Length: 217
Image (tube, rainbow, N blue to C red):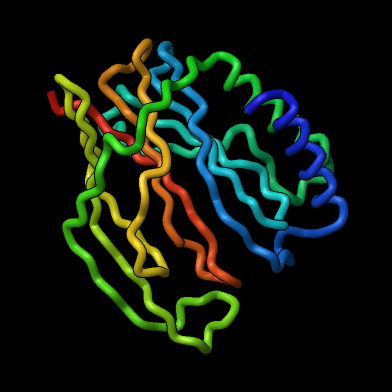
């Protein structure tokens, strides 16, 4: 995310806060993941979840704490955000985006890898039919739940994620969109971005998730 991108999001946030309340937004959109980089001093890998809807929500910042007992569990950064009903919400939006920019400035950028070198393994799958579509609850649709594990081989190392649950609203399986390595900071880790139809409203929207893989060598 460069300075212009952050400024653009600042202006969008200001406009939406001035003309609408997020609680009354009716138009949804996809959610995408941006892997920012790694902080070798704090043993963290950061990423952002972006909301491409009309709520005006700021991107949510997460990190993996690699020296913790469960490094695969993403931790949401809450300290840089303020309640949306703050009297100085425009100033707070700008403050939050500056904080994100400051954090990103100290990170070592990730190295993109070919997502074709990784694969998804589906251990259990379940299909349900029900009133899952948010804006048309009277219509029954299918929901697909899977237990998934992601792996990647890069001689002489192999990487695997923990098993995780994926919930989607289309028969199509999740796809690996992006894959990143951290050769100068944390060579024993990878971060993959998967994509699937995971937002059941309006026409249905793409949802992306970040998945941490660790070396099994």
